[in-house]
Image (cartoon, rainbow, N blue to C red; front, side, top):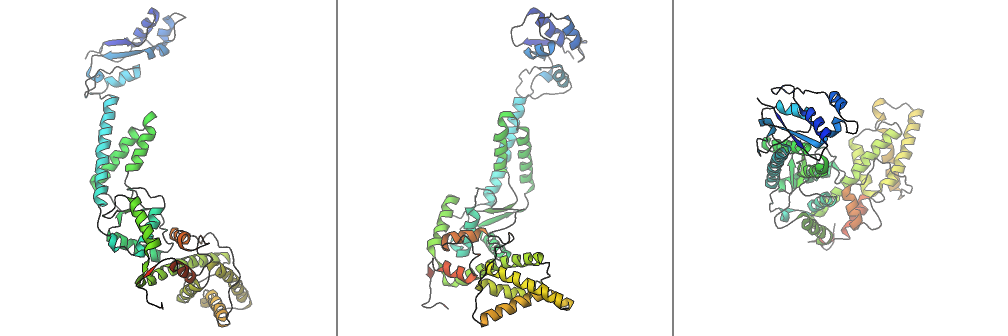
Length: 417
């Protein structure tokens, strides 16, 4: 093959500079990619006022009458800027220029993005479920969507801890029901065609991720990628999520609740409080190095306490009784099987004595970080519980009473039981 070079000068040059550039591109053998002169040889012959050849060559391009120097797609001549690029070009059978490669990647990206968008559109297709949503359903959906919701992004990612109410006993059944209604859609695995499109989208984003395009392509990739998790699906009758959020917010604040659903609401609040009590028990166990059995009597005690007493007052009581248990264990030799039940026994006996005498829990203790405020708790506190941003200073009964006093109860009898 012939590799005789055509040299292009990009700027006006002196005669000596032209000679140096011509030597730079001169081949030793027209059938090979070996060059006649080294850079050192060229610089040794140039005039002193002339620049060295490594700088001069930047003002030139080299083209060879060879298919590797013409883009096979756009058919345009594509000269090279250096000897290294020259040698690399001769070693390829066919050549596609950067502009055409970028066009191919953009085309691939657009096709991949369309596959992903169509998959999500089909999966999140609107269904007519709104009329089936209960008060608690709407409350949970509002909690999920109120916290920085993004269209066509998961409300709960697959690796995230679910923290709607703070209680799995509440969260999991409600999520399952909402998935069944079509309000939420679970994505655990992608179909092969969709997974391939996502891989190609990532590949094109990485390849196109340079200089001025860097942030644009990264942002587009992050926006289009389909994450595993739980997604919100808009019901029929709504144009966008903002319209839906406004509607369910108004329903929760002003729409009221049926008397039949009040029992569910009470159970939800108690379960949420009990969950924090369980976390508190774990903390007390670690704080006092005390074995506390997760027994049925303990569960019954925590249900009772959560209904009647604020958790801050119970924490003080727990700490006081834990110290009494430790003293008792040092002064006596309880059977090994009984040790893990002593805390429940001491707390239960104290609460029973307190209630039989009509006494109250007076002292509080600041809660540890293990006891948290769930998103739903914060939302309810803000809208229904005056002067409180969480439920730590209230019993479950007080939370329910204050909450119900702010909403309409439909089909309510003259006297509630």
